Image 1 (cartoon, rainbow, N blue to C red):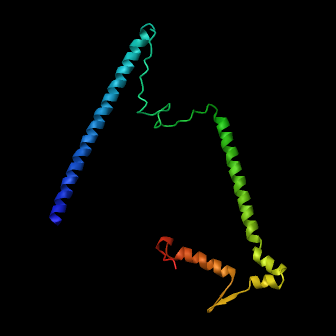
Image 2 (cartoon, rainbow, N blue to C red):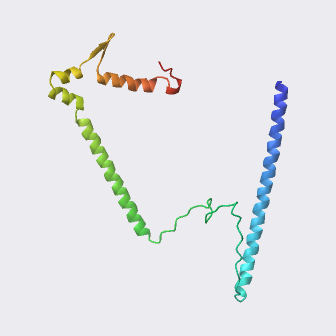
Length: 172
């Protein structure tokens, strides 16, 4: 059985190598044809420049509506934006964009500092609220663990990070 698999591997390897060689030959032939066509077009252009201009009617190909790209232009053509003529203006635009990005980053850092400096909402509510509010955030003893909302949230986060992926979990 192993010998048969080895023989098939060798056959497929040879076949793919031959197909790759054929593909490369075709590519080389196509590039050669393109180069020859370009040379001929350039030679014809030189001859046409010397000849007097002649009015030529363009023939439009009839397009089959059931086949082809129904929109104008080639969808696979590389997009190349128009070259900018003023390098100074483009540099100024780049500097303005960079300044805006730096300002946005500074604002984000300031907001982050403010959020770190302020206390969590539940701590403020505990101080303001009466006995009911304190009971709401009181610890609950479950088995041998004392749970409060922060510990419960942390437990859920750690379970998500360290536990099994959701797809492999068994729902109870």
